[in-house]
Image 1 (cartoon, rainbow, N blue to C red):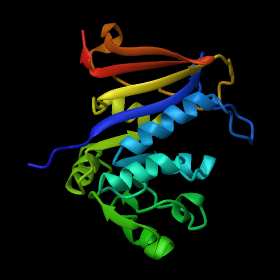
Image 2: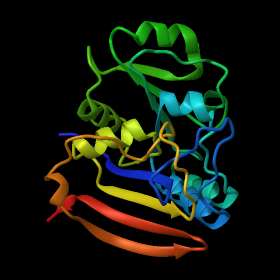
Image 3: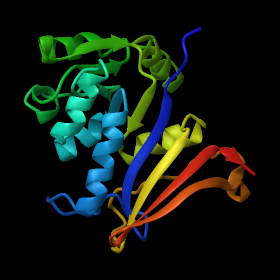
Length: 226
């Protein structure tokens, strides 16, 4: 039986729980030291996943930026960059997004009704696979496991983080809390309303609390609830 990847949810949020504000410019929540920490986790991962909404909104390249870390991956008989993965139900993806044109291999996981649309849009920019008529996160993880992904880093957005947490599929949460307050009801949040395992009184185990400049990193084990 193929093992599913070890799943790390990674996010930076304001003290009041927001991933961004509502302005047209991306709100930088982390500092340079924390961005470097994220780069290290990316380098240690076999794949990085973001949702299609995050891709359209932020247009990220999603790379390992350190030359030394890429060289170490190659020395360890890995590709220079982790596999980049996005998930879409609608297939509404544009071929000119930075995601497709930087780094190494890319994978789109979608559903039966959208698979041909995605292939027609992207051509040879990415491998495209369907997990069936509906988007099932367990099947997504199974697909990545079949592809040799042992550690998956999930970088958002909030809808995907919420689904992973609600379905008890996250092994770790890496949460960088920035000393900012957003206070905008329409801004994206780290987690939304859901029926989370164990309910509101179930406490996750804290793995680490670390001060990184003016940011605090909190690492939790969501599956270890008391």
